[in-house]
Length: 124
Image (cartoon, rainbow, N blue to C red; front, side, top):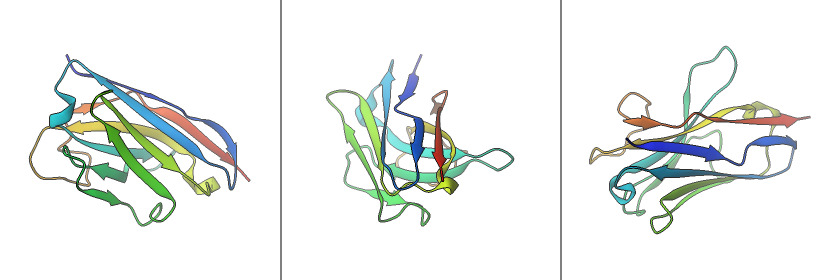
């Protein structure tokens, strides 16, 4: 049973930063492409960032590009998302997801495993 547990969300003022983490257990973490998605109330789940299983490929949504960094530590079975210069529009539940396929994808459907999410609220 693969489990993903996010942490690091919270309430932050606009302009601040957060570092989210996602710990994976029960599977071979180093074989998964890892993604971060977010979902705001009344909106569909949207892609935020991804990192390939070997860490050589990263990709960001335009909405966070230039102010976010995704990274992974295969020794700790953990993926991170650092988001700087937070805006109220970043308010959402942030989910990490694991994808065992070869190709990296930016849509939620192909991801095999999901965490329960962590709330990020950015106040203006």
